[in-house]
Length: 609
Image (tube, rainbow, N blue to C red; front, side):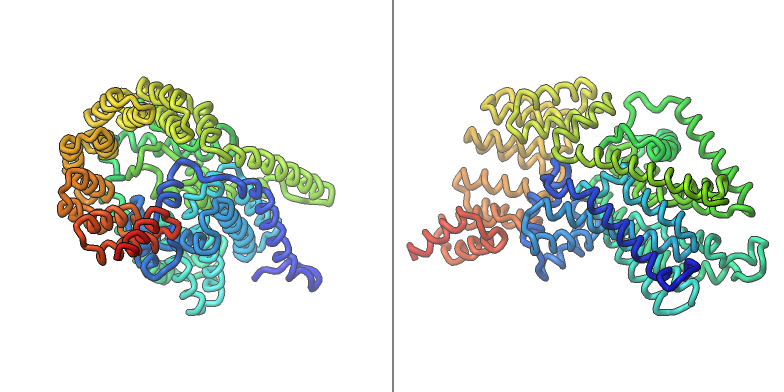
């Protein structure tokens, strides 16, 4: 390890700085510990996910490693949520605190890793401070559903630390630790799939293991052994890529080239690379969702962004021998963004601040090392000026971040801010409609959905939201009309079928509801909710055996549904199969111990027996 010259306390100083940095990050994010869940993935990940609500168990651990729920495979992230629930229950404040703690630890570990890699204590501290306090990273920390970012980031930092030890000592134990932490990081989020490439870059600078190749003094190793030692890491990356693509493709999250053509993807990728840098320099007007431009990106934006990328690359290549960190850090930034830059498009966003969580570390190093080279600290006066400027920047960035964290205090506040900074954003309008709908503010909800539909007349999700708003107000005919429009706009959008069918069930139109639900199965025949709804339709018609068959299918595809267990038990009880009914009531209570209806029905059944 590089050590600061001086007294015995110099060995302790890095750890004190590491602790102070982590503590400041915790203080900065402490305001988020009182925030509720956000109406964006938090409901699906945590609030309505009965698996997570049940907490840690062998069954749920097996589920975490086998599920592709939410179009991803990240078992360690699921296990962290399960642990939260077992320790704290469904308390969003504690889950926010865990996110903050992981980010704070990653910030401290990044400082330690860079310090060990480079020996530059001041610059490493500045890079880690930027990472910990930059507003662009608020989305990854203040959003509970992005636990995968901060958890994978934590294991990424441990991977860097272990690799530094291995590179300097050649120990098999340290190499095993690199493999372990890298595998844990991939199981938290597949974003780390480019880490083998990054470690090869670190062999060039600052480790200098490739010196014999680039013409520097002959104290390095040739490329072949350095590449060979990365092969196990590459194998892990390829496995993660294959599993992730299968999970996302199977869930329908991968957008086809017919929807977003290749040229548009390339243009968006180039502009996104430049925009992430712009947001790093000017971290204002950050939004939770950046939509694709309906009219396409202007050529001037693509041309300007491409010129910036080419210019940066040329400068980094030409300066390689004198300043190898320029090319290494530039490729760090470009390479780590490849999995999420949109060439393989997943979801409808053009870019997302959370994607830059780890890639921007490369840019932070590039900027701060370049600044140190341009303005060397010669003399106590210049050193003092640089220290004052650093502290001023530190406080300014912290203040901007503190403000950005505040936008995550409430779904409506978050979406209204996003709507202000991205006004032509029909998706945010729809999100706002969903938030108002949840609050029972149906008038504002309908207004947001209408504005979303004006921006995009094919927005089936907004038509579905309008149908729900009308249904909640008792306007069945209008609700049915909006559901039908949603189905016409997007026939594979099964939520519209289920909502329309539920409306018909409430009107006791069981045959009509059954036809709608069965139509939904044509697009997704393993949907637990649809089979559950079909079971309720059959139960309403008195066809209890058919109802039981579909409740069984619902539980097959979602074994953690207490409602399906209760309705299955009700149907069995009506058929006189009381022992089986009691077993399903007990299963519902095992999944959700405070399920009052299940407990009452079980008590009634036991009294009659």
